[in-house]
Image (cartoon, rainbow, N blue to C red; front, side):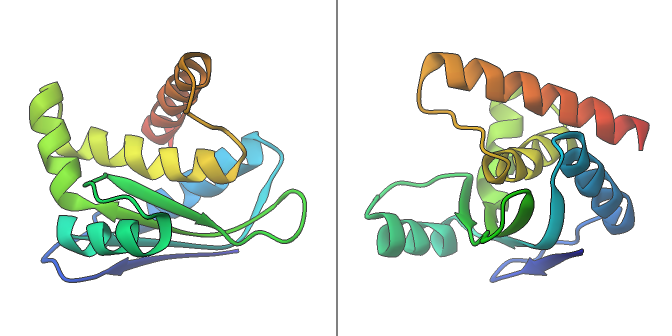
Length: 141
């Protein structure tokens, strides 16, 4: 059950690493999944834009890209890239704390690996509800 946090091309310090790991495990377990290996890579807009272009053929900034490496049902393996630039900008736009937005994006990536999507309106509503649940779970951790 390895959960790893990496920093690429930015100056960023992730707080509460142990708490976040316990929270992510709890979130996965709430959906009857175990985490085998989960890598979070916090990076810049430009770093994530390069990945977006190279792997998804999208020439746009985004806050998160999730790669599912899972091979076994009910076992999570994946890499989640998060742009801290986008997280900060989104927090300002939404007038919320950066920490709350960061938790929303962190949980969003794991929720994708748990099978939740956000392409349609109904999927987006369900995803937002799951994110809200995840944030409340973090607050209890």
